[in-house]
Length: 384
Image (cartoon, rainbow, N blue to C red; front, side):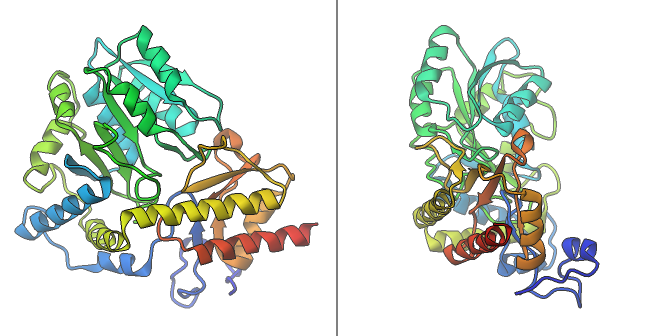
């Protein structure tokens, strides 16, 4: 295995350009998103184009939604949105919180903090429970806060990608469901199809995710489960916007369609990927991610790195490793890119350089993970 290093700026951004790289030499993504996408899924995007008001599209939408319901473990409607998960943050904040009420955001990293800011940007009244990065938000914290204040919604990021923390959503949901008028909103962008998630059993009213994480699709699609309680609430919000009006999205979704033009090619890929995921088995997929977490965690500890996330709440999809050995992470990333054909992470936001994240999500195999970690070992031995 080798990477072409001449004219590296071209190689990095056009790895499939004829004469530069082939499938065995392309830059493989070990990133927390976008993730590596299998050739079969990329090829599924080459179907002939159809019109989104044709019967063929209705069939495609219905096929995707039916499979998504199985993957989410829900009987609720599932919406398909032409946006990133960030768009559905805005949909949740705007549609689920009345102007004279409050939303409680649970913040323990960059993305949960950003969602709280999205709520504020939409004019919502926001309270925050905030803990140190690397720690989980525990249900007793939520219980104490909700005893003193009433909220229209509680919003939590299931898997905080910036820190590698998996929040105890099931236990938090047990608290929230004791308040009849409070909706439970969950970002499962980097946990869906990589960590246990049972929408109906856990009492989640609105769960949002996107395509480029453990789903292992190209970016461009997001998905949301929609409990009827959410639509009842949205009807009480007079200014829901236009593009992310959940009532309009639901109305067209019931007809297996979308209000605006969707990315049909990626939807073909989603249909194929869901078929493959359900054949693998969602619970078996969860188990594979847990195995990869243990491999990455054991590797880090054996190399005398610390694990950044709180013990007992570590993500099955991304392991955040504290750079306790003072490794030159830029040099490591360059080595992995130029000699091993792997693109890797060197920490997110204020943790950049202090941590690095090993993403093990989507269709990654245990063999690929071991090969990636072996590459880091080679760099460490050379640097010693």
